[in-house]
Image (cartoon, rainbow, N blue to C red; front, side, top):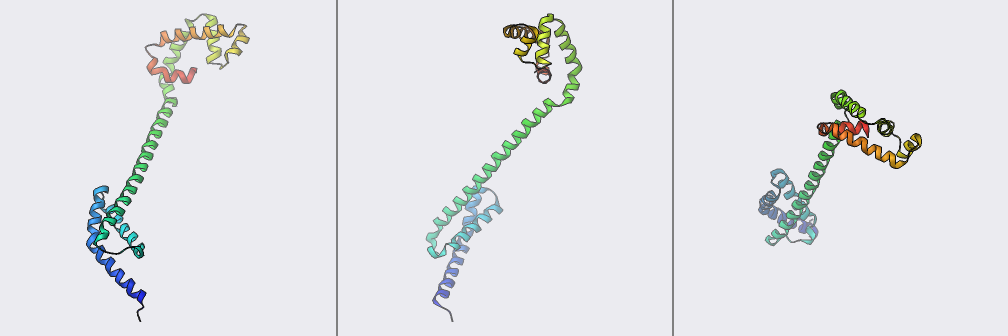
Length: 194
């Protein structure tokens, strides 16, 4: 024997089926307008009707339900597009990070040092020879021995201001001698000297 509830479910299923048959392609086409992907549009259209079926107790299956279907479809499509945009932004960020990391790695790569090493050493030694002994000594303690200005001042029995002046003087000499090579050698020198 069929109960009243069974009859309601049966008539509800029949009404749902009719609504599905008459509206599925409209909803799928609507989704495809947003998503530009036929398979994804089919999935969203199916999700729309699953959502309607799950909410069937609160709905009446009629032609007046079509605007509701469009609103559901639109919201689902917009959610997918938002997720895709987040994925794309994350992907672009990841590519940017990888590119920056690669650039940094290539700057630190020892092959660059090997490529320009001999020429840089020659130019650097030439620049150091053009400096007065006191300036060269102060500069070498700062850049090659990594001493702080205060430590150099104590070691050479001079003021910190004198250390600062000598370093500025040495850097002017280096800039003058290396000016033609500076764009190429900047990365190398920063790794070696600073």
